[in-house]
Image 1 (cartoon, rainbow, N blue to C red):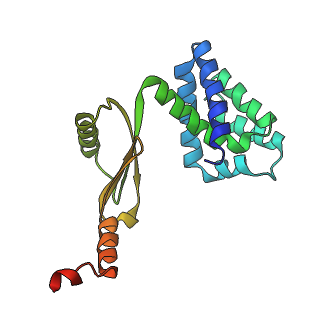
Image 2 (image 1 turned 135 degrees about the vertical axis):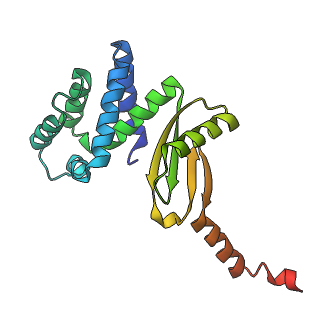
Image 3 (image 1 turned 90 degrees about the vertical axis):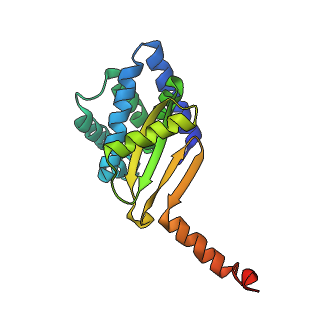
Length: 187
């Protein structure tokens, strides 16, 4: 996040206004759509962050991509950001809005990174294991694939990191050999 404080303040304003107008679920759906749009299109994210593209061009591009897909409140909010030259932070604001919605509803985001895509059964198993072992009940599982893990998984939730990847194991073994940890045991 480039400016988490700014993103948090704008997101809080949007969430508070959505609660006040009883449109929280619609705004959350809009922010999830925007998050998927930004993650799915690197060009769109680059357009938002480009200082070279004029404001009116950005407004037209955002309007064309989101026409009929966002509520009036979300559209007005995004247009306000663009008019105030804050569209550069829209990526962070969208993430902050989703995080604030999750905090408001008690939903916990869990990120699972694996070397290969996992099945729905594995996802359900991981969610049930987390529910059993922690006090987290409402879980939003986000998965990603990084082949460089070689095998295993990395699980992130509530500022916790469980790294059960092969690449971490290999790094640990390399570190032990570099420190000559085994020489002491031979003597």
